[in-house]
Image (tube, rainbow, N blue to C red; front, side, top):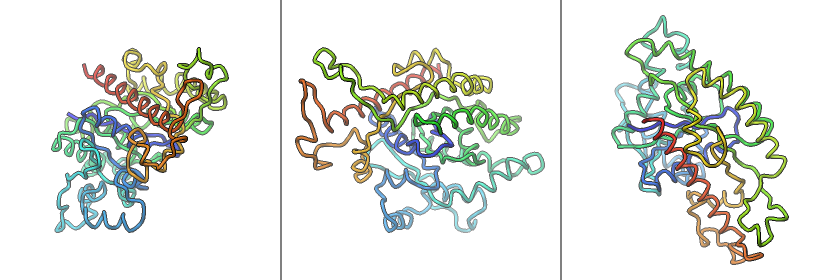
Length: 369
């Protein structure tokens, strides 16, 4: 049975889409059959993965791949389409450039479902028929995963505290919180300490009887990923005796990371533990070498590589010298017998996502034993 992992933070701009794409690709490279789901009406994951970078290419995709996006597959459950015109194939997946990676495309109309889901969340006691709205996403994704032998489902969620996102998260087995080391994500972690346990409490009414439209257990947070920070090399790290010294996060970012760790350990983790929504700290320590609970990994700012990655629909760690037409000097140069340049950044990205993917897989494996 597939493990469903959602990436969520109601603070936008924390690279959820980029992380889903890169992490999904890395899971696929490790031999897993992976489905990435674009549950953000902005559809950035769909555009990135399939190379749909303008209006015409989007129109052609939706014309040629009718009823293979998230909204079209769910709409009949919400009676938003004529019953005489059922979806051609509600469980079809779209292939990507990686043979083990598939996508359920997004659709801007997906946001239209939120009103009905919100109504279902508040009317369940008087209108039991609306229960299916709450579990529609879970039922669809579990069905697709089973039919296509999917091992891991990664969901790119929108940055909002909506009823739709509540149902998506509570349909998950696990979730990860991407953050940027700044004041706004510090606030977001603080806020999630209240939002997520409340989501679990409010949705528990749908798990009372044996006909629950959602998983019995609450999803567990695996940890948070730090994104988009800049690094520097200390003066001493350029010396021959310190060639293996890792590059450091700049002071402004490291200060905010410390604050995020503090509020996470003081508020978010205890709140989630009380709601049975937290992976065990010992399982984290046995799986993750990057940092103490619950800092899963750090992804530095690879801004110069992102446009090339997006243009080619390839993850950063798959880029070659020819992909960016990089000159020899930009591609790789040496100082004090140490390699520098774009080649080194690509290798660093590969190492980061490889470690992140392996850590998550090991943690889930331990949790399931």
